Length: 217
Image 1 (cartoon, rainbow, N blue to C red):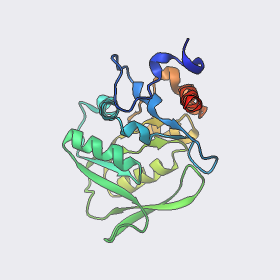
Image 2: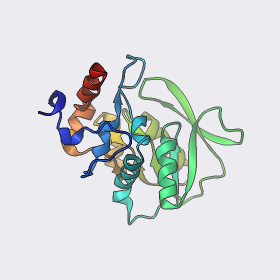
Image 3: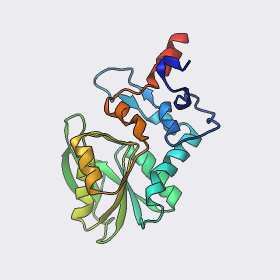
């Protein structure tokens, strides 16, 4: 019987081996649940990046909708968007633009205020010499929950005359902000439709396997 009510084909906790049959999104069960409480995100996707095949397949899945599209440069959003963004840029053979939280760049910048998923007011910046009018940019972040961070990144790009060629992220939740992003831009994420309700509910069935594993250790 599947552990904790999970579909056993969707649960994969091994960081060194890949399943024989790798379906779209198989690697999502590698992500770990929050163990530290309400001041943290509800899950940790970074465990997925430790698995070489998972990271490769995640990038391949995210790029599938854009395989025939012109992309001039990839931009990743500080900080976790740097991982996927740089990986995607290397995969495509394109350059990478870091969209930073304010205060980290020692050059002239354009800035944009925003409110992130936790409700905190922040600013993001890009260097002034990176975006020329007509440049087609693939925007990458780890996650879109409320959409506030991504909307700020979009505005930064478009205010400089850049074109958002697409948006790629592990998950775009069905929040008002997430729906706005989907409705207005070409997007890709890694979530199969039959699992989307789990992501919107902030609890994956695969978390049961993590808890059972810990209890057995």
